Image (cartoon, rainbow, N blue to C red; front, side, top):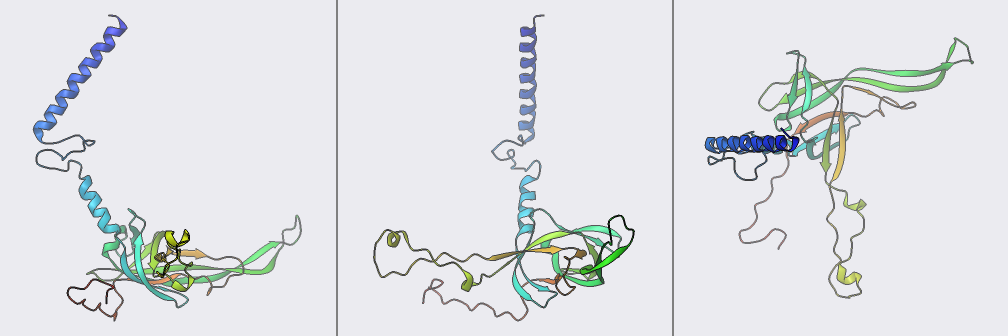
Length: 252
């Protein structure tokens, strides 16, 4: 058989096989994963991708929270995880690793297990086996964490290093000057005030880990860590006053 005829026969067999599979899936009420239409007459999600996307979106949604640092600072804002990355902790009671979703978290608190100051040493002379203290030190700290989920008791855990994001209200005093409208910038004069760009929230990266080491010359007090995270609206926060019927927000 000539090579050209062999390739043609193989292509025909592949086309027949593909058509048969497509017909069988259509009869079963399913579609290929790449199809843009609904998943069969019954509207089934064959691989569960739509449900997974909805769950991931709900789990990654920022939540109101209060964060307290070891230096006494305390702020309220909105907390979020890295999208698709849960908080991994080792449950000391059950002796197993557990993934915690943001929607299930109620509080996370850190307490020092051990702290020390490391000294810096160097060789006294080239080729010498004697070390001398340089006078510089740096801090080291080990943390234990207590975690509480919604509707459950607190548990002692070890936290795998992770990054959280904390968005707080902007400091309007530090915002850049507002940008004038296009008409005023073009030389048009009127009595309307300049348009000011809406201030953006301030985003902080919260490094959550059980071990930390500072720089040379730093103190233990200067090695600040996240002491407590409490999810939910702050206690005692004033409730929003009801708006009068028929009036838009911001209109007297």
